[in-house]
Structures are given as structure tokens and as C-alpha cells.
Length: 259
Ligand SMILES: Nc1ncnc2c1ncn2[C@@H]1O[C@H](COP(=O)(O)OP(=O)(O)O)[C@@H](O)[C@H]1O
Ligand SMILES: [Mg+2]
Image (cartoon, rainbow, N blue to C red; front, side, top):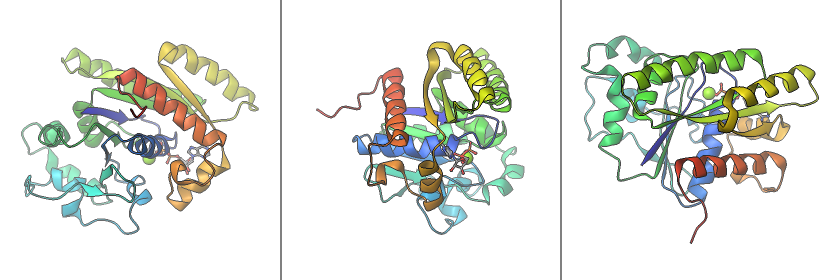
């Protein structure tokens, strides 16, 4: 089981869009995928559920003292091979209880260790901060994928995150930067071209791809659909995500080609 956090301390940079679409592509390619929605905004969950889940059936149960391994946090989705641990607005309310636990930052890690035979890839959609849920996600992860926009604040968000990745590595965690992906890119905007050049320097060989600004992507998000579910799969939004999925798979040593 390979665990990847999709994170950036800046909001609106495409974390959720990247996370759900990669999850859909990996699942379609036959990998057993678990998507964990660790953001109290629960945008990833809303791709798969019309109504919020009961707290006891969602990630927040992991952060309650009443948690038992028998609780059913993992739910199937309409996509074959893709399961989800949903988030929910109530996640935010659990923060104040968490510090009472031994190792409060290891709740997700412990859960995954006990379920490691069930999934090939786990993708964790992180909130735009470095609070308890992101720290739990990073601690459980081998890799961090960082969506950025070609904008100063998005790249600043990465700098802040990188500081925490380095800190965790210095404590002996085997967390590694998987790479960056530029999202919502519009090369007609001069400042974006300049910041994209900067992003390529910052991530260097770890810059894994570009997803251009596209109304189809925003519309699919609004409908709660993955790009893989669209009827037209040859457009640039889809092929750019497929390219990203291949780059990610190659970096983590997973084959996407079926035998
Ligand atoms: N490539 C894109 N083109 C157009 N809109 C996009 C693109 N990527 C993301 N969006 C839109 O931008 C908004 C923020 O994206 P989201 O994935 O929710 O960011 P985050 O999870 O980092 O907050 C969403 O409304 C989404 O539909
Ligand atoms: Mg999000």
C-alpha cells in the first residue's frame, strides 16, 4: 500500500480536483484505491455523496475516544475499485479532543497500518493548513504531491509545507516530495508564465505536469463528476490528468498498464 498526501497550505490551488481525478484514473486502471477526505470542507466527499455521512461513519470517528476498529469508515463509491473515507463539517469540531490521545498525529497512520492489505494506493486530500489533519496525513504518507497555481501565494504555500516535510524527515519519518503539478494554468497571462518558470525551478525534476485552466474541469467539479466519467475523454483536461497519473505512477513504482 502506497500512501500519498495531496497538500498545499494555500487553498483553491486544485488539491481536491487533482486528488479525486487521480483516484478515479488509478481505480479505472485496476488499482484498489482509497480516497481519504481529511478536509473539514469535505469537497472530495461531495463528489461521491449527496448527503453528509454520519460522524460515526466518517473520518471524524477516528478522532473520537469512542473509535473502535469495528466501525465502518470505508465506503464503496459508484466507481469500481474506489473507496472513500468521507470527511464532514463535524471534523473541525473534533480538533479540541484530539490532543488528549497518545500520539494524536498518528490516528490515520494506525488505521491504515491495520488495513494495509486492502488497498494499493491511498490518496489523502488535505486541508489548506498545517493543523492536526494535515499532520496526520503527512505522518501516514510516504509521498506528498503538491498542486500549485502559477501564482506567488500558491508557491509560498509550498514553501511553508516544505518546511514541515523537512522537519518530519529530520525526525526520521520517510516522507518524500513526490512532486508538484501546476493547475489552472493560463499561459496567456504574463505573470503566470513568469511564476510557472519559477515553479519549474523550484520543483526541478519533480515538476510532474501542467493542468490548464479549463471550463470543463470547473463544470465537472460543480456536477460532482470525475473527468474519467465524462463522455469525451480525448480533451486536454483529461489527457493532462492522465499524463499526471502516469508520472505519479512512474515515480512511485506502480504500473498503470494492465497485463
Ligand atoms: N484546471 C482547472 N480549470 C478550471 N477550474 C479548476 C481547475 N482546477 C480546479 N478548478 C476549480 O478551482 C476551484 C478550486 O479547486 P479545488 O480543487 O477545490 O482546490 P483546493 O482543494 O486546493 O482548495 C474549484 O472550484 C475547481 O472546480
Ligand atoms: Mg480542497
